[in-house]
Amino acid sequence: YAFFVFFLLNSVVFKAIKRLPITSSDTLLIIANTTFLYFSLILLYKGYGKNSIENITLYFGIVYLLAAIALKKYFPSQTHLYNGLFCISLTALAAFAGIKFNGFILTIVWVAMAVIMFLSGMVFRIKLFRIAAIFLFAVTLIKLLLIDSLKFSPAEKVIAYIVIGVVLLIISFLYQKYKKIIFDMKDN
Image (cartoon, rainbow, N blue to C red; front, side, top):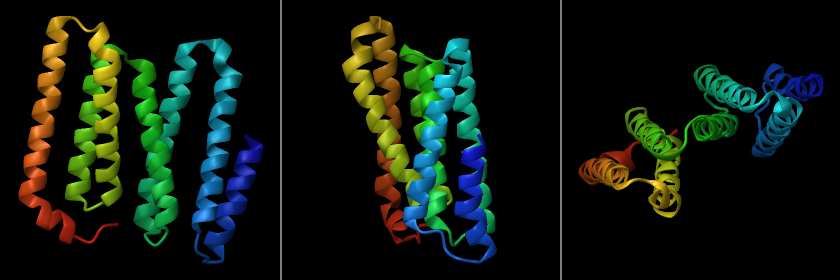
């Protein structure tokens, strides 16, 4: 933990004190360091069972989401770092859902996450949220078609396909109706 904290302090705090911008290469180093910390913790606590992996993943998702929100509020010019922290958070939260749930429930949870991200991206005018939502929709559809369709009962297949179809139709309708507004808005 100490190496991670020292690296983070060296990368971020020094530049914040000196009012230097955090570049995309700094952000990539922070993401790489965070990834190494995450997998180190997973390897370290793997013997304690699935629950410890769930907790580590959830903590990473929440901490990095809060850090991204704080950074966006207090240092709005640091878009590279904000985007990087948000991506780490999104990946961790989606992975947490993947570890915690399986099958039909996971499909529904990922669809709900994608809808929330897409609507948040439209309301708060954040392009990254909309792109992440579309990516999560795509992953969910691929999972549904390639994995879940082999395991679901007929009733679960019908419900899953109808729910995803309705959600995609609604989002497509909203997107088509408001695409001029969406594309004309200044994205963060």
